[in-house]
Every structure is written in structure tokens, then in C-alpha cells.
Image (tube, rainbow, N blue to C red):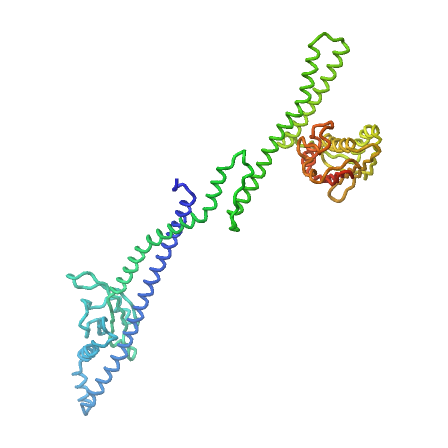
Amino acid sequence: MFYKSIRFKISIVYMAILALTLSAFSVVLYHQVSKSLYENMDTLLRSRAEGIVSAMSTYWVTERLGTMRYYDTGDQVMAGNDQLNFATVAQRWVEARSKDPKLLNLIVQIFDATGEIVASSKNTQGITSVSEQTLFAALQGRSTFDTLTSSYPTKKVQLFRVFITPAVQNDRVEYIVQVGTPIDSITNALNSLKLTLFILFPITVLITGVMGAFLAKMTLQPVNNMIRTIHDITVENMKMKLNIPNTKDEIQKLAETFNDMLARLEYAFTSQRHLFEDLSHELKTPLTILKGEFEVVLKKMRSAEEYEAILRSSLEEIDKMTRLVENLLMLASFESKRIMPERKMLDLSLLIESVTTNMKKVAERKNVRISLEVKKYVEVIGDEKELRQLFLNILDNAVKYTGEGGRINISVEKDNNNATIVIKDSGVGIPQDEIEHIFDRFYRVHGTRKSYGFGLGLSIVKAIVDAHNGSIKVTSSHGTGTSFVITLPLH
């Protein structure tokens, strides 16, 4: 089902990550825009208020000088000052500046030192006073920002941002200027931003999710192709391989790995089939002989000597089958790691000398000479019985496939880490194209398949070497002999 597919899960995870990212981005964006708008408004209010204080002070000085020129004496000047009303001057200045483009949409109010309003613009929006805290701060010469609410009860509640600054002369607060403006513009801008984000958020996530699903489909298309090919692979067509996409990514590695696995499975199935075929063939001969001999015995009465000969022959065939079964069980145990070497310290030099002494008796029957060159005290940790079997199998093959008058040379060397045993014969040799198969079960080199044996000796040799963490290499050419090089780690 689609909702259980990797493509769906990738799309959902991608949409969730995108939604979280956009949410965080929207919150940060809204906060930064809000902060920027309020900072700009505060900067504007401060600039306008300071400009009003400067202009008002200049206008007030001008009015005073004009009054003083009108009167001739000090008494007349005092009378003029008494008549000069600051409130009238301030109101006249405010009204004169009401059409100034810089003061449009601004509330301008001038208060005296007691907090009483002395002049204001017409659009006060119900703001007619300053708070006690603001007045106290202004009398101490501090400028402050504040947010006020319209005092018109019949109108919708409206918020204003105001800036209050004192006009100080001769270390005394002469008057206080308050400049304000509605924050509707900021509120509207922020609401528009929220609405835009609210609309774009799901649309962006949805579109990105659809695009992500499409891209996931394109990315996983090679996987779908592999799945279809895998469904077509059976035991009968194990040679079928996946098409490897040239993507240089994990999917290409997956296809290559799967093809490697198919190759190993094909080899395993082929080996198993060959095992059954070879096992059937190897068991067929002794069983046929046994059956024939028993049929001969049952046809008529025989003498004791004849019965004994037939029983001895049957016993030989039974021994062959017993050795075959034992060897197969040994190989199976090695491969399943049910048999582990009984590790102990042993002198490999003495072990090989003992094996060589036993094989010399067999080699003398074919006039094959065995020479031994061994370095003393080559100590390894391993299973003595298994290592003896290893060298017996190799030497037995060497004697078996070396003609009369031939020779077998054995040498044992060691370095800092390994012991190296070289067994070289002058026998018939192994063709180059068959060397890689000589360790396979039941494999016998072409031209030797009618000889005695089941083709398991070298398979057992390879299993023992692997169990001892060693290595074995073979070099040979047809007609010039074979050389086995076994390397075992020292203790």
C-alpha cells in the first residue's frame, strides 16, 4: 500500500521537517518585522519630537524679542511679558505647523511643568493627558516611550505609540512635548504578514510534499526495477542479474551487492547440486559392487574360502563408504564451525618429520624420493591431529601423482610472524584452468578421475588451513609438477 511505502514515508518526513523549518522561520520573521516596524516608528517619533522642541524654542525666543522691541522700558517689557501667554504662542505654533508634511498623521501636544495641556493639534484622538510616571520622568529630564489607548468610549479601542520629551532651559523644565501616532499601520502590516504566512505555509508544505514524492519516486525507480527483476529470479535462472544504474550512489552499490549475493547463491546452489551428483556417483559404485557380490553369494552354496573372499571385498567397499561419510561430516563440521582446532603449542618441525617418515615407506614402493629440509623449533599453536591430516593429504596426493623415479621436496622456514611449508613434487602437474577448482569437494583433475579417491582430500586441507587462520597457495603447470605453499601463524 502507498502509505506504507518508503516514498510516502520520505514525503511525510520531508513535509514535517519543512513544516517545522517554516514555522521557526515564520516566528523569527514575524518577530524581526515587528521589532523593525516599532523601532522605525520610535525613531520617527523621537526625531519629530526633538525637531518640535528645537523649533518651538526658536519660535518662543523670537516672540519674546518682538515683544521687547515693542515696549521701550523695562516696566513696559515686564508688562509685555505678563501679557505674553505661552499657551497662546504654543497653540499658534502648533496650528501653523498642522499642515507640515512631516507632522501629518501625528498627534502633537505641549504640556506645562504641571502636566496641564497648553497646546495640541486637532487630531488628539482623545489623548489629553500624560500619566504620573511619564510626568515624573519628564520632570527629571528623561525622555520616554509609552503605548496609550484612545479615551473615546464610543469608538473602537485604538492604540497609540507616543514619545514624551521635556524642553529644558537653564536646568529647568519649561514644557513637555508629546508626539504620538496610531499603531494601526503596524498592526495592519503585521496582520497582513500573518495572513500571508498562514496562507503560504500550507500551500508551500503541500507543493513541496508533492514535489518530494515525485523526486522520491524518481530516486527509487531503480529500486522498483530491481524488485521486478528479483521477482523473476528463480533457482532455474540464477544467472540472471540486476541492471546496475550508473548513479554513483547507494542504489548502485545496492545493485552491485545484490549481484554479488546472487553470484554467491548461484555458486552455493551449483555446489550443492554437484555435491549430490558426485555423492550419488561415489556411492553408486560400492553399492553396485556390494549388490553384485551378494547376488552371486545367494545363487548357490559357496565354500568357506569363497564366502570369506566375498565378505572381505564387501568390507573394503563398506570402508570406502565409511571414509567418504567421515570426510563429508568433517567438511560439514568445519564449514559450520562446529569443529574448532584443539589449540596447543607444538613443534611443527617434529610433526612434519614424523609425517614424512611415514610417507617415505609408501613412496619407496614407487621409487619416489622424498627430501626434507626443516628449520628446528618452528613452534605454532594448533591441533596436532588436524595438522597431521593436512600434511598427510598433500603428501599422499604428491606420491600418488608422481611417477616412478620422481622426487618430492619439503622445506620448513619461519620469519617473525609465520611458518612457511613448501611441498613440491615432480608429478603430472595441474592445468592452469583447473587450479582454482582443486579445493572444491569431489573435484578431480582431468585425467585423474579414474584413480583412487573421492576428491575430498584437498577440500579437507583447505578447511584445516582456514581453521588455523593460515593460507595455502598452489603453483603448477601440466607435466612439470606442483608446489603447495602453506603459511601458518607462529605462536
